[in-house]
Image (cartoon, helix red, strand yellow):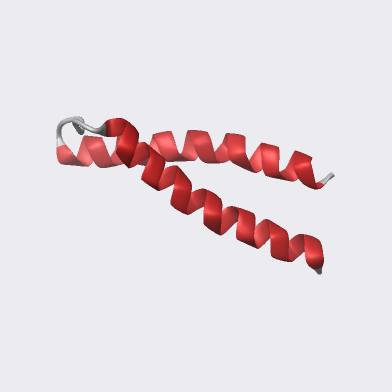
Length: 60
């Protein structure tokens, strides 16, 4: 069951990261040159935090 939680969260993080990057680019007024690198950093931070929380919730 744990793998299902991680998979669903990962899918949500993908869309959330894309939305966050779009908001940043909109407020900036133009797209980033290295969009994929910034997307990677956003999804990396969100995934580490989210997976840490899920791991702690599954242990309790």
